[in-house]
Length: 108
Image (cartoon, rainbow, N blue to C red; front, side, top):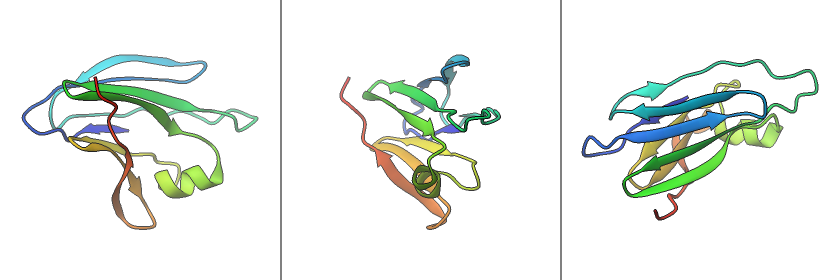
């Protein structure tokens, strides 16, 4: 789940995929979001990652990893939410009940 919370009506490009599924390039207008669902494979090795880009930067990162520590810090009940903001990409923390900075943008 990726939400474009960038200021100034900036468009966010999101390309998310796993080893088996390429969800394609999405162009998200300000305030819009991209959701998808999937099933974890039998071996619990499913991994989804995204490459997010906008005028001031880009970042590639894991958005879902079946590791317990990853899920505890960056997902809520296996529901992984990311919010793209001007200063970086935030992950929703169930423990803190709000978004926390997970990744700074790499310069373009």
